[in-house]
Length: 293
Image 1 (cartoon, helix red, strand yellow):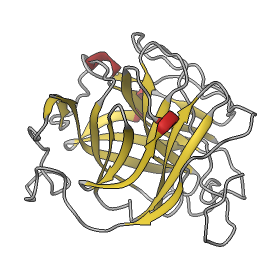
Image 2 (cartoon, rainbow, N blue to C red):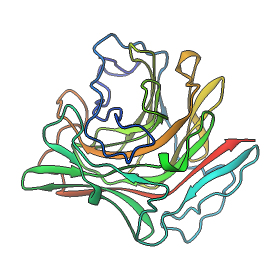
Image 3 (cartoon, one colour):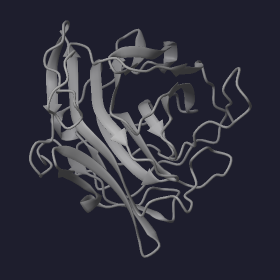
Protein backbone atom coordinates (compact mmCIF):
# COMPACT_ATOMS: atom_id res chain seq x y z
CA UNK A 1 0.00 0.00 0.00
CA UNK A 2 1.34 3.43 -0.94
CA UNK A 3 0.44 6.54 1.03
CA UNK A 4 0.87 10.19 0.17
CA UNK A 5 3.75 11.89 1.97
CA UNK A 6 3.04 14.64 4.44
CA UNK A 7 -0.69 13.98 4.54
CA UNK A 8 -2.97 11.89 6.77
CA UNK A 9 -2.40 8.19 6.12
CA UNK A 10 -5.05 7.54 3.50
CA UNK A 11 -4.82 4.91 0.72
CA UNK A 12 -4.38 6.20 -2.79
CA UNK A 13 -6.94 5.75 -5.51
CA UNK A 14 -7.55 2.12 -6.33
CA UNK A 15 -5.70 0.57 -9.25
CA UNK A 16 -8.95 -0.73 -10.67
CA UNK A 17 -8.26 -0.11 -14.36
CA UNK A 18 -5.51 -2.31 -15.73
CA UNK A 19 -3.54 -3.14 -18.84
CA UNK A 20 -5.08 -4.41 -22.08
CA UNK A 21 -4.33 -7.85 -23.46
CA UNK A 22 -5.25 -7.27 -27.09
CA UNK A 23 -2.44 -6.29 -29.52
CA UNK A 24 -2.64 -2.83 -31.01
CA UNK A 25 -3.15 -4.19 -34.53
CA UNK A 26 -6.22 -6.24 -33.62
CA UNK A 27 -9.83 -5.09 -33.60
CA UNK A 28 -9.35 -4.60 -29.87
CA UNK A 29 -12.07 -7.02 -28.81
CA UNK A 30 -10.90 -7.06 -25.24
CA UNK A 31 -11.61 -10.30 -23.44
CA UNK A 32 -9.69 -9.46 -20.29
CA UNK A 33 -6.99 -7.48 -18.53
CA UNK A 34 -3.68 -8.41 -17.04
CA UNK A 35 -3.81 -9.17 -13.34
CA UNK A 36 -1.88 -6.87 -11.06
CA UNK A 37 1.63 -8.02 -10.21
CA UNK A 38 2.09 -9.32 -6.69
CA UNK A 39 5.70 -8.26 -6.32
CA UNK A 40 6.59 -5.11 -4.32
CA UNK A 41 5.99 -1.75 -5.96
CA UNK A 42 8.86 0.72 -6.15
CA UNK A 43 7.71 4.32 -6.51
CA UNK A 44 10.36 6.81 -7.60
CA UNK A 45 7.96 9.74 -7.40
CA UNK A 46 5.31 10.37 -4.78
CA UNK A 47 3.93 13.88 -5.09
CA UNK A 48 0.65 15.71 -4.87
CA UNK A 49 -0.09 18.97 -6.71
CA UNK A 50 -3.01 21.36 -6.73
CA UNK A 51 -3.40 23.55 -9.80
CA UNK A 52 -6.22 25.66 -11.14
CA UNK A 53 -6.87 27.58 -14.34
CA UNK A 54 -4.57 27.82 -17.33
CA UNK A 55 -4.87 27.08 -21.03
CA UNK A 56 -3.45 24.56 -23.43
CA UNK A 57 -0.13 25.36 -25.10
CA UNK A 58 -0.69 27.46 -28.19
CA UNK A 59 -4.38 28.07 -27.46
CA UNK A 60 -5.30 31.12 -25.41
CA UNK A 61 -8.82 31.89 -26.57
CA UNK A 62 -12.10 30.17 -25.74
CA UNK A 63 -14.35 29.16 -28.60
CA UNK A 64 -17.77 27.81 -29.42
CA UNK A 65 -16.59 24.22 -28.95
CA UNK A 66 -18.41 21.91 -26.57
CA UNK A 67 -15.91 22.56 -23.77
CA UNK A 68 -15.32 26.25 -24.51
CA UNK A 69 -11.75 25.62 -25.67
CA UNK A 70 -11.02 25.00 -29.32
CA UNK A 71 -8.92 22.06 -30.46
CA UNK A 72 -5.30 23.24 -30.85
CA UNK A 73 -3.42 23.29 -34.12
CA UNK A 74 0.32 23.19 -34.68
CA UNK A 75 2.65 23.73 -31.73
CA UNK A 76 6.21 25.03 -31.81
CA UNK A 77 8.67 22.16 -32.02
CA UNK A 78 6.00 19.60 -32.87
CA UNK A 79 4.13 18.23 -35.87
CA UNK A 80 0.46 17.38 -35.33
CA UNK A 81 -0.05 13.74 -36.29
CA UNK A 82 -3.56 13.09 -34.97
CA UNK A 83 -6.61 15.22 -34.15
CA UNK A 84 -10.27 14.41 -33.59
CA UNK A 85 -12.95 16.78 -32.30
CA UNK A 86 -15.74 14.18 -32.68
CA UNK A 87 -17.91 16.23 -34.98
CA UNK A 88 -21.07 14.45 -36.05
CA UNK A 89 -22.57 11.43 -34.34
CA UNK A 90 -20.36 8.53 -35.41
CA UNK A 91 -16.99 7.36 -34.11
CA UNK A 92 -14.44 7.19 -36.93
CA UNK A 93 -13.68 3.47 -37.18
CA UNK A 94 -10.64 4.11 -39.38
CA UNK A 95 -8.92 5.60 -36.32
CA UNK A 96 -10.77 4.20 -33.29
CA UNK A 97 -11.62 0.69 -32.04
CA UNK A 98 -14.26 0.21 -29.35
CA UNK A 99 -13.72 -2.25 -26.50
CA UNK A 100 -15.84 -5.35 -26.03
CA UNK A 101 -15.47 -7.97 -23.29
CA UNK A 102 -15.01 -8.46 -19.58
CA UNK A 103 -12.05 -6.89 -17.76
CA UNK A 104 -10.03 -9.56 -16.04
CA UNK A 105 -10.48 -9.68 -12.28
CA UNK A 106 -14.04 -8.38 -12.31
CA UNK A 107 -17.32 -10.27 -12.21
CA UNK A 108 -19.75 -7.37 -12.41
CA UNK A 109 -18.37 -5.15 -15.16
CA UNK A 110 -18.36 -5.50 -18.95
CA UNK A 111 -17.06 -3.33 -21.77
CA UNK A 112 -19.72 -3.01 -24.45
CA UNK A 113 -19.29 -1.39 -27.84
CA UNK A 114 -22.55 0.52 -27.62
CA UNK A 115 -21.33 2.27 -24.46
CA UNK A 116 -18.69 4.07 -26.52
CA UNK A 117 -20.46 6.64 -28.63
CA UNK A 118 -20.28 10.08 -30.20
CA UNK A 119 -23.08 12.53 -29.50
CA UNK A 120 -23.41 16.31 -29.55
CA UNK A 121 -19.80 16.78 -30.63
CA UNK A 122 -18.32 14.64 -27.84
CA UNK A 123 -16.84 11.20 -27.44
CA UNK A 124 -18.74 9.59 -24.55
CA UNK A 125 -17.55 6.67 -22.43
CA UNK A 126 -20.82 5.72 -20.77
CA UNK A 127 -21.27 3.48 -17.73
CA UNK A 128 -24.73 2.03 -17.14
CA UNK A 129 -26.31 -0.37 -14.67
CA UNK A 130 -28.78 -2.75 -16.30
CA UNK A 131 -30.45 -5.68 -14.52
CA UNK A 132 -27.80 -5.60 -11.82
CA UNK A 133 -24.84 -5.64 -14.24
CA UNK A 134 -22.51 -2.76 -15.08
CA UNK A 135 -21.54 -1.87 -18.64
CA UNK A 136 -18.92 0.68 -19.72
CA UNK A 137 -17.19 2.08 -22.76
CA UNK A 138 -13.58 2.18 -23.89
CA UNK A 139 -11.68 2.90 -27.08
CA UNK A 140 -8.19 3.03 -28.58
CA UNK A 141 -6.77 4.96 -31.51
CA UNK A 142 -4.11 2.31 -32.20
CA UNK A 143 -5.40 2.14 -35.77
CA UNK A 144 -4.13 5.67 -36.35
CA UNK A 145 -0.57 4.73 -35.37
CA UNK A 146 1.81 4.75 -32.42
CA UNK A 147 4.65 7.01 -31.23
CA UNK A 148 7.74 6.47 -29.12
CA UNK A 149 8.20 10.12 -28.19
CA UNK A 150 5.69 12.91 -28.49
CA UNK A 151 2.78 14.68 -26.87
CA UNK A 152 -0.78 13.47 -26.27
CA UNK A 153 -3.58 15.73 -24.95
CA UNK A 154 -7.23 15.03 -24.07
CA UNK A 155 -9.92 17.62 -23.29
CA UNK A 156 -12.51 16.03 -20.99
CA UNK A 157 -14.75 16.12 -17.95
CA UNK A 158 -15.99 13.28 -15.73
CA UNK A 159 -19.43 13.03 -14.18
CA UNK A 160 -19.33 12.45 -10.43
CA UNK A 161 -20.08 8.79 -9.72
CA UNK A 162 -18.94 6.66 -6.80
CA UNK A 163 -17.55 3.35 -8.01
CA UNK A 164 -17.15 4.39 -11.65
CA UNK A 165 -13.55 4.89 -12.72
CA UNK A 166 -11.67 5.93 -15.83
CA UNK A 167 -8.13 5.92 -17.16
CA UNK A 168 -6.37 7.56 -20.12
CA UNK A 169 -3.25 5.54 -20.93
CA UNK A 170 -0.46 4.79 -23.37
CA UNK A 171 0.13 1.11 -24.11
CA UNK A 172 2.91 -0.60 -26.10
CA UNK A 173 2.37 -1.32 -29.76
CA UNK A 174 2.10 -5.08 -30.20
CA UNK A 175 0.72 -5.70 -26.72
CA UNK A 176 3.89 -6.47 -24.75
CA UNK A 177 3.69 -5.15 -21.21
CA UNK A 178 5.21 -3.18 -19.49
CA UNK A 179 5.79 -0.27 -20.07
CA UNK A 180 2.55 1.64 -19.55
CA UNK A 181 1.84 5.31 -18.93
CA UNK A 182 -1.40 6.24 -17.17
CA UNK A 183 -1.68 10.03 -17.44
CA UNK A 184 -5.14 10.27 -15.87
CA UNK A 185 -6.70 7.70 -13.56
CA UNK A 186 -9.50 7.86 -11.03
CA UNK A 187 -11.49 5.06 -9.35
CA UNK A 188 -14.61 7.19 -8.90
CA UNK A 189 -16.32 9.59 -6.53
CA UNK A 190 -16.17 13.37 -6.44
CA UNK A 191 -13.68 13.71 -9.35
CA UNK A 192 -11.42 15.89 -7.21
CA UNK A 193 -8.15 14.10 -8.00
CA UNK A 194 -6.34 12.11 -10.68
CA UNK A 195 -3.33 9.86 -10.42
CA UNK A 196 -0.52 9.56 -12.98
CA UNK A 197 1.53 6.35 -13.06
CA UNK A 198 4.56 5.14 -15.00
CA UNK A 199 4.95 1.34 -15.10
CA UNK A 200 8.15 -0.47 -16.04
CA UNK A 201 10.03 -3.76 -15.56
CA UNK A 202 8.54 -7.26 -15.26
CA UNK A 203 8.22 -6.63 -11.50
CA UNK A 204 5.76 -3.80 -12.29
CA UNK A 205 7.80 -1.05 -10.70
CA UNK A 206 5.86 2.21 -10.61
CA UNK A 207 6.18 5.94 -10.13
CA UNK A 208 3.07 7.79 -8.91
CA UNK A 209 1.94 11.40 -8.75
CA UNK A 210 -1.43 12.91 -7.77
CA UNK A 211 -3.15 16.07 -8.94
CA UNK A 212 -6.04 17.72 -7.14
CA UNK A 213 -8.63 19.70 -9.12
CA UNK A 214 -12.30 19.56 -10.04
CA UNK A 215 -12.37 17.14 -12.96
CA UNK A 216 -16.14 17.21 -13.16
CA UNK A 217 -15.40 20.46 -15.03
CA UNK A 218 -13.59 20.71 -18.36
CA UNK A 219 -9.81 20.32 -18.23
CA UNK A 220 -7.06 19.26 -20.62
CA UNK A 221 -4.79 16.49 -19.39
CA UNK A 222 -1.80 15.27 -21.33
CA UNK A 223 1.57 13.62 -21.33
CA UNK A 224 4.85 14.46 -23.07
CA UNK A 225 7.45 11.73 -23.51
CA UNK A 226 11.05 12.48 -24.49
CA UNK A 227 14.17 10.29 -24.23
CA UNK A 228 14.94 11.83 -20.80
CA UNK A 229 11.58 12.20 -19.04
CA UNK A 230 7.82 11.81 -18.87
CA UNK A 231 5.99 15.08 -18.19
CA UNK A 232 2.34 15.15 -17.14
CA UNK A 233 0.39 18.28 -18.08
CA UNK A 234 -2.85 19.95 -17.03
CA UNK A 235 -4.29 22.86 -19.01
CA UNK A 236 -0.95 23.42 -20.72
CA UNK A 237 1.30 23.29 -17.64
CA UNK A 238 3.57 20.53 -16.41
CA UNK A 239 2.44 19.30 -13.00
CA UNK A 240 4.60 16.19 -12.53
CA UNK A 241 7.74 14.63 -14.05
CA UNK A 242 9.06 11.06 -13.99
CA UNK A 243 12.61 10.23 -15.08
CA UNK A 244 15.08 7.34 -15.21
CA UNK A 245 13.64 3.87 -15.67
CA UNK A 246 10.10 5.33 -15.64
CA UNK A 247 10.63 6.63 -19.20
CA UNK A 248 9.46 4.22 -21.95
CA UNK A 249 11.42 3.89 -25.19
CA UNK A 250 9.07 2.09 -27.58
CA UNK A 251 6.03 2.95 -29.73
CA UNK A 252 2.80 3.36 -27.76
CA UNK A 253 -0.84 4.00 -28.60
CA UNK A 254 -3.59 5.85 -26.74
CA UNK A 255 -6.43 4.18 -24.86
CA UNK A 256 -9.40 5.87 -23.19
CA UNK A 257 -11.58 3.72 -20.95
CA UNK A 258 -14.19 3.74 -18.21
CA UNK A 259 -15.09 0.89 -15.90
CA UNK A 260 -17.18 0.05 -12.85
CA UNK A 261 -14.53 -0.20 -10.14
CA UNK A 262 -13.77 -3.16 -7.92
CA UNK A 263 -15.02 -2.07 -4.51
CA UNK A 264 -12.24 -1.73 -1.95
CA UNK A 265 -13.54 0.34 0.96
CA UNK A 266 -10.02 1.49 1.91
CA UNK A 267 -9.65 3.12 -1.52
CA UNK A 268 -11.35 6.47 -1.92
CA UNK A 269 -14.31 6.49 -4.32
CA UNK A 270 -14.01 2.90 -5.53
CA UNK A 271 -17.31 1.61 -4.09
CA UNK A 272 -20.67 2.42 -5.65
CA UNK A 273 -23.40 3.51 -3.24
CA UNK A 274 -26.89 4.98 -3.14
CA UNK A 275 -25.63 8.17 -4.82
CA UNK A 276 -24.18 6.36 -7.86
CA UNK A 277 -26.25 7.19 -10.95
CA UNK A 278 -27.58 4.39 -13.13
CA UNK A 279 -25.87 6.17 -16.02
CA UNK A 280 -22.74 8.31 -15.90
CA UNK A 281 -20.48 9.69 -18.62
CA UNK A 282 -16.85 10.52 -19.23
CA UNK A 283 -17.11 13.20 -21.93
CA UNK A 284 -14.23 14.02 -24.29
CA UNK A 285 -14.31 17.12 -26.48
CA UNK A 286 -11.15 16.45 -28.46
CA UNK A 287 -7.96 14.40 -28.65
CA UNK A 288 -4.71 15.61 -30.26
CA UNK A 289 -1.24 14.12 -30.52
CA UNK A 290 2.06 15.53 -31.75
CA UNK A 291 5.39 14.11 -32.85
CA UNK A 292 8.59 16.07 -32.19
CA UNK A 293 10.10 17.75 -35.24
